[in-house]
Image 1 (tube, rainbow, N blue to C red):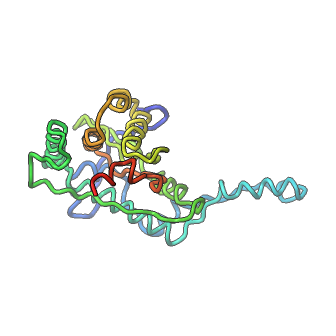
Image 2 (cartoon, helix red, strand yellow):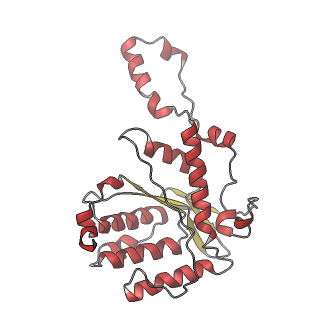
Image 3 (tube, helix red, strand yellow):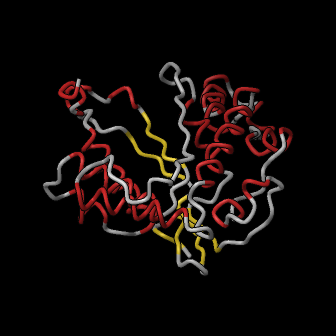
Length: 251
């Protein structure tokens, strides 16, 4: 099945060899955990050139050489470490949202409680623990952060359909930080990105209405839980403004 060019695969399950992952369909539907060697092989992209390119005149070869940065990727140890960290982050975040043992349903009920009360700290089941993790990737502009993340995530299907649970699992979603540096803008970009992946209408339903930032954040979290979002990547997060996000008012 395809959503606007995004290929969705039907879930097939396999044991990961990790006890805490066993019996969790959201984890066992993911590709097998890769060894260091397999990670390097999957990330690598070889450059291809024709013999006639080598014999071309200098000004023509200059154009061919300039394309190497787009076509060639040689993974370094930092790239391998990033893949390992993202692998742990995605799978670890699903440990506390297993649809088989009811933990995912409890997260959804807590999210529904926050929508009803408008309180982001509200909950119905206090024993529910979040296993979500986060990290930041810091580097100079143009150093290859976005490219590397894209190479790592290309090893995962973006959408996995689970017929037994009637669930479209979104393994990863990339969102650009809003141009105006506001939390509301990030929420709107989240809805828009999810619409492109699933062919839904979340932006029209929630992003175009006069919701408060707190309400939009609660809706965003609930939608992420309902689609079992594995990891959310926010690019150019440095654009987030403390004043426009409302953080200064809470200090």
